Length: 174
Image 1 (cartoon, rainbow, N blue to C red):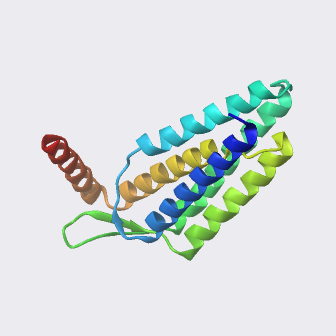
Image 2 (spheres, one colour; image 1 turned 135 degrees about the horizontal axis):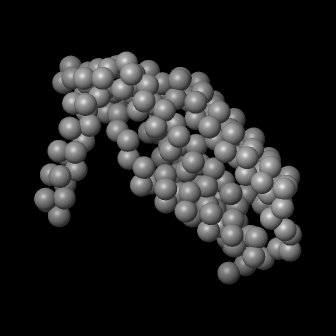
C-alpha cells in the first residue's frame, strides 16, 4: 500500500472520528468511563507511526523524545481545558450527566490543529494524529469522570452501577 493511500485512509478515519466526537461532545449524555475506543485509536495511531518510521530513514533520537513529550503535554493540556468546559449535573434519575459546548469544540479543534502542525514539522505527515486523538480523548474522559466523582460522589456510584447493569443486559441479549 502506498504512503499516499495510507495518508488518505488516515484523513478519512480522522474526519469520521472527529464528526463522531463533536456530536458526542455536544450531546447531553450519562457520564461513563469506557476506554476501549480510545485505546483502539491509540493502537492504530502507533501502527501508522511505526509504518512511517519503517518507510523513512531517520533515527528515533532526542528529537523523537521531544516530539513524544510535546504530544503527551499537548494532549493532556487540551484534554484538561475541554474537560473543564463541560457542564456536569445530576439528572432526575440520579445519574451524572455531561455536555460540552462551543468552547469544548474550540479546544478540540485547536489541539488537533496544533498537533497536525507539529506532526508535519517533525515527520512531514499526520501519521500520529490517531494516537493523539485517542490519547487526548482518553485523558479528557478520565478527567471528566474524576471531576464528576469529586462533585457528585453518590450519583457517580449510581451512574457506574447503571452502566454495568446496562452492559450486562446487552451481553445477555447477544
